[in-house]
Image (cartoon, rainbow, N blue to C red; front, side, top):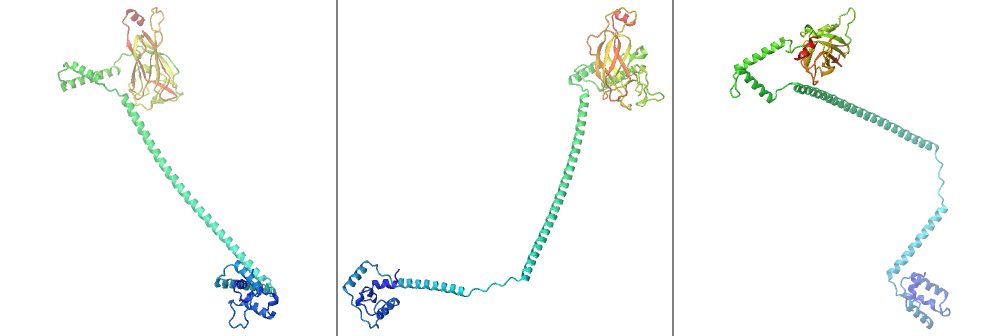
Length: 439
């Protein structure tokens, strides 16, 4: 690439000293003058002839003029001066930097750095000791952190365990309280059920029954349905009813004929195994002796505990010969009253009564009842101790034998006590039946 000074000389007028390149060798000045001329054209920024230069301008030849004309036609327009100055300064700066770099490299090559001294053994040992101290410090720190973490874990576990224990204790208290509440509710529900059962067992008069009873009261008092009843009349009627009940109680308690009573001719002919106490020892049930005495079940006990016929186990039977042949209507089973009894678990529970007519030797009459079931019932301890059960079998004929079968009692596994058995009915009115009964 041509220097900017040479490019400027190419575009300058013919009187510029840079046009000497186009002059033939024969017309050039001497070598010393040419060298001075080239040197001055490189370093001078002004291309015009120096005012103090004594050299007169050269006259160009015709060939040089033509060549210069061709260059002038094809060259670019001249650049501004400041741009030329800036280009020269940049190139000089780049050259200076390259020279400085080369000089630095030469200096480094001619003056190499002194070799580094060998490491000091004591310094290395100190450095190693410092590293060991740092490692030991880190180890201690790690152990301390681990110990603190374990302590925190134990504390958290303790807190969680305490909270869990408190929660479990609270839940247990709540559970116990809930169980107590449920127990009380169950007890109240049981009491309510018992009360309802008692209400169901109570025999209340319906409105029509009360009206019928009131009409009977008015009829017994001799008053019409429209007339009012005096209080004194009601009192008198109540007194009469009480007296009748007293007489009824005096008449064997229920006011019905008993055809199985021992004093009237009834007797026990067969029974299951009787309860026999050990030899030389008096067995007391409900506070009294219960030895094998069958006639006790056909006699009034007068409410005295222990006056009964005891049979072995919780099931058995008793067959009773009646006073005479009758048409049965009902049977009555009696046990000791709950007001005076010590233990009523020996009372029979599930019972069934059979009846038939057993002919005596020499009797020839027929038409009497064969063995048939008369009634089936359960003795209830919550009711009155004297309980009467009607005969439910239809078209029952004349009977003179009754069999009581009990299949269970109220809890005792050793024995069952029968305080009294009664058989109610009426004697037949036909002569044949009466004769057969008397036979």
